[in-house]
Each structure stands twice: as structure tokens, then as C-alpha cells.
Image (cartoon, rainbow, N blue to C red; front, top):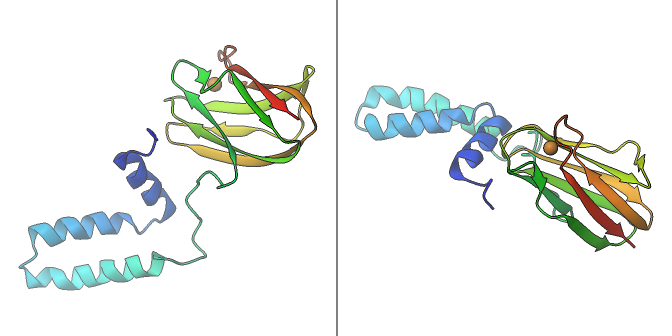
Length: 160
Ligand SMILES: [Cu+2]
């Protein structure tokens, strides 16, 4: 997927773990000064910082789309990645929302002109991901981005 560029991965990784930037630093130091023994203590400290992060289940997980999610993407041109979605089964639906555009987008649902309450996804910038669960009865829903000026961001979701 386009949003998973190397830069995005680095950004996401750095955002996940404040110590992770040390990895980049240490690899830089490692390549430039690998023969200089006086950098070893510094690298050891960096290594401790890394191990304090690595694999700990208490870290905030990287924000990713849940595996079972129904994925909608915001793409360039103030559009969703499709004009029609579904049909998907009624009940609890997990939505994943991926921003492949360069500006903020939201995702809300409406049925018969009435907004589905307590459900709004918000992806602030390129590479942002949001997800949420909403219970939907069968019907035809409008998929809407309610950011001002994004009135063309409309799609239809069929739930059955
Ligand atoms: Cu939008």
C-alpha cells in the first residue's frame, strides 16, 4: 500500500517508541565510528534504551488497521477510494480508515439523513490510521467526510 513507504514506517516507528530514534543514531555512529572504542559506552547506553522499549507489551501499539476491519481509504482529490462499499453484514462492524491523502479527513455514517451517533473516524495526515466499531442495522448508508470543503467526499455503503 502506498502509505507504507519507508518514511512512513520510520515515522510510525518513531512515534511508537520515544527511544527508537536512538536506533537510527546508533547505526549512524556505528557506521561512522565503528572502530572508535570510546563510542562503545554510548552505544551501550543506547542499547539499554532500545532494550527498554523492545517488545514490551506496555508500549502503546502502533496504530494499525485491525485485521478484521472493513477498510476505507481517503485518497487524493478529496475522495474515498470507492464510491460504493459493501454489501457487508449487519451487526458490529469494525471500520479501518487510512489516510492516503495529504490533508485531514473524517469518516462518519448517515442513514436516511440521520447521522449514526457516537461514531467518527479522524485521520489527521498522510499515513494516519483510525479504527472503530459501530453497530449497523441493514440499510443503505452514506459515508461522509465532514471536514469543511470536503462535500464531495461521499460514498454509499450497503449493509444487509
Ligand atoms: Cu475529507
